[in-house]
Image: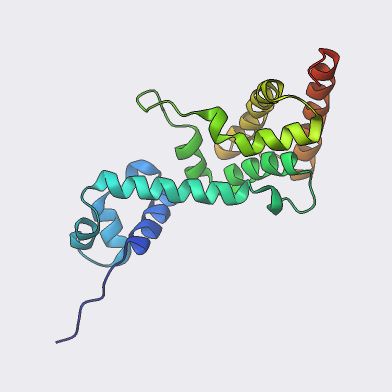
Length: 188
């Protein structure tokens, strides 16, 4: 008798990511994962205590994918902070279902995140590139992020297809305008 193929947690998460990419997070369930792997639902529940636990691992994998896009080193010669913003928008364009799940879901029932702590690396980039202190860098990032998120949201929903060169120019314009305003206020 041939031994059964062992389905790993990594295979389950990869299948879950593909399901979310194709049908959104509402399509993620044990039967869909099992069908994607050509097995029963048994491997799902022998690897995970609940479907919610698998969903959390799939969400973490989606977050890791987003972080790879936003890695300043992946910015092909762009200034580091601009590379983060351009990566965020590119993630929205290339992975719209994952972007919507991560950044456009209703989070009102979730524990609030410590956004400032989670963005410590970005704040360091801003402070190094602008001379702003941490409080000013945080406000600068919030204002810049709202603009970047708006561009990304229109890309993720297919509302507008932004040309990457134009997107880069717009980010530079907003960045320079904000920086001039912050410097005029004496924040740097």
